[in-house]
Length: 309
Ligand code: CP
Image (tube, rainbow, N blue to C red; front, side, top):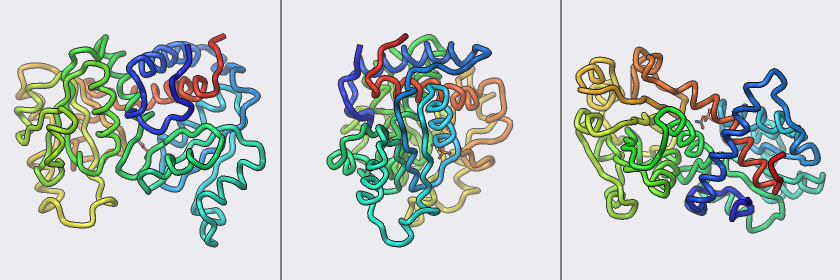
């Protein structure tokens, strides 16, 4: 089977069949990653550049590791240490890199739509590793893989996204994916961080009371406050945010059931989530990171048009 798309720009462009194919392929790669020799020769004739115009810990390391596990040749590009500081444009930078016979580009950029712009101008396959406040498709895929692994399926699951929905590319990609795969989605947070159109436009439930929202869900994905993307004051203080929307052990203990806790990282401990929740047995935060490698191997492998060996 093949993906219906040449690039992975967003979950918006994927069908439910594409998503299932990626998740099933990731399961096979997860099995490879449990072996003593965690490497397969699938992409040994492929060269991939990791083009990061914005900071990253998890996504960047995860893509690089996925590429190495698939035996691809990899090049890491960091905008801050490049000729971008001398005025070179995105398109010039990428065309120069491609002239060195690069097959795929993994790109993170602070501008929403940057990978879509590139896809119109270059022949290499492009994987969006996060663009502004638009999408972060591989994060949503690894979140879905982790929910499926922990709870058995996505169909009918009640998934809550908490926090800065307005500025979160993780939220948008998760909403697209979960809705396509038959899950129910609710968002919770301060009214100033939840777009007013979201309920109608994306068919999600909205709840401003965190305890009620937690009582509704099976899985809660806690999001970071994206202070770097906010150009105005949208809540009074981080302390007040924590009191109203921070996920604490006391709050979870007051529920009548145990829910699964997720977070895409990086975590702001004591703001959106307390340490005794992030580090608890209910939390699958580090499993999400582990699963990211298998999911990114699946994406790269399928986009390279290979067949499972
Ligand atoms: N989840 C995520 O995208 O983390 P990084 O910004 O560290 O890549």
